Image 1 (tube, rainbow, N blue to C red):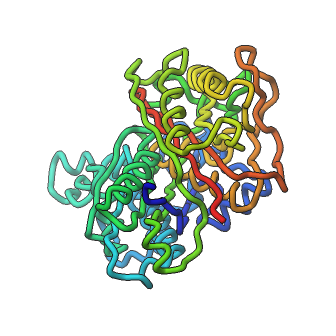
Image 2 (cartoon, helix red, strand yellow):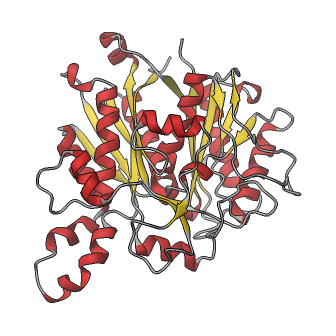
Length: 400
């Protein structure tokens, strides 16, 4: 039997809360973080809806406990705050002598600071400390420094599947005996380039997004960071610490159908989910809930929906997208939604697909539209599908 992978720590900061408890409270109240652009300096302030972390960068520096303030991007600060919560939640400092890794997903890196200081960089060297943050690995290195992790550090950048792939790689490292435990997840801040790039693709919704709705119009971008701590069975047994869930399956596919669009038949999504399900040893009727990628775009929702219906057939579990809560946090989406999925297992509930009003004509299912409490949630699949057709599915299971 392969070594089991246990989740022992959770940490998150998003548009609906600065920590795990605040995120849970917002979810229970069906409180969305989506609203007008406020913290990012952009001419789109009153025209594009986003889900921002409700803090200035200066406030994030204070919350992260950073004393040397220069050279820290918003992206790094979000990652430090969320990863530290997961690290402390798992009490990693109490149990030394174990090989510990950090695997972090991000795509924009420190672009928010580069945008501010680029003109200075062209004429003098005063902004070099901020220009250096452009490298995606910069945030990972800063997180590792704060957590004092040095055994293994790497960065994943596969767009919207980045954080899910970070978790998958961490699990593989543990299962292959390379590490005993891993802090894995992703971080992403909003930037002008980020916002304008998605706007150029014409896939942003100027209203709160409504995934899997016939009248959906697109994405509301979000920012945030989320990390989970995963540990080997041996490490958990030695410490006797609490387990929040077991990671039982993962699957990745890269269909390379298009730079930004999923294939109409959802073959990439289908293969990722199928691989995860086969690894888990579960059957289709044993998955209680799918936290769908569900971006609210015309392309994703039909592609993912068809893939789900193909794989699950008549045994469709309950389905919803939580992006109407947090916005689409892009590279942090996989770990953000992994944590939201684990909360479903912990509290035996299922999150609603906010803003839904009309069933899609091309799909047979209707997503969950209200918070469901006191429901059996033993196993949850969570999907994260990135540009370029890089698709990843994770399955978490209740551990007794």
